[in-house]
Image 1: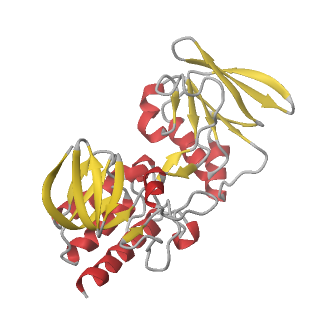
Image 2 (image 1 turned 120 degrees about the horizontal axis):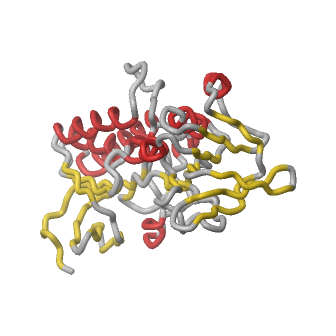
Amino acid sequence: MKPKTEKIHDLIIVGAGPAGLGASIYASRYKLKHIIIGEEIGGQAREASKIENWPGEKNISGNDLMDRVVDQAKSFGGEIIQSSVEKVEKIKDNFEIYVGGEIYKSKTIIFALGMKPRKMNVSGENKFIGKGISYCATCDATFFRDKVVAIVGGGNAAAMAAVHLSDFAKKVYLLHRKEVGWNPTRQEELKKNSKIEIIISEGVKEVKGSEKVESIICEYNGTEKELTVQGLFIEIGSVPGVAIVKNLGVEIDDQNYIKVNQSQMTNIENAWAAGDATTGSNKFRQIITAMAEGAVAAGSVYKKLKL
């Protein structure tokens, strides 16, 4: 494996979601020579069918919002490389980022790693991913037109997914435990929607089918029941995607979030982190806080390199 170039960037941003893009916009304003490397341009924010808490927009889809942010980052000069990062090493004073057979070098790094969907870890889940099981209603709802689907989850994301899916599916089961995190607006939407049936369940125990999902086994009050469905959407939260930072010795907390200080710096010199995968903003995981953390991290890089 040979380096793409001997050029050493001021900054490399790993992750192209809201935090990474926010960092890029501010890095460009600070005239920092940088690139962004990310597998999912726009990150999980694209999955939101409706965003109502972004300043200046009463209602916008996550996809449309992130398209605008990506365009802005590029217009300022941010170069985005769509690829996954295989490994990051610190060699003397610089970082080396391994990407698709090439090595990119940088004086500093910002990890904007975002979150990965949390799995149920039940029988049949891995077998049917992409064959009826989905972790993104916004992405895959159209594939379930006039079909019966189920959603597992008790938070606002699950409620939003149920409402969105009801525009396509003929029937939507929403399975949740007794304690839910729906806000009053979401709860009202669910109650008014005749396509959505809310079921209190201890959880899905098994996903069954031959080539595709055909049914799920759920637990009700200690007994099991089989529901015939053609799709299963899993909305039980996310976990930080921090695997690539561990070999650097980046400190994480007991929930696998990257520990950062007020400047978004990690315990590793010249390494910062921003967004949902960090302890920043009291783990208040919102698009607006992720972008703000990215901006703070970029400002911290500028202070370290240029002032």
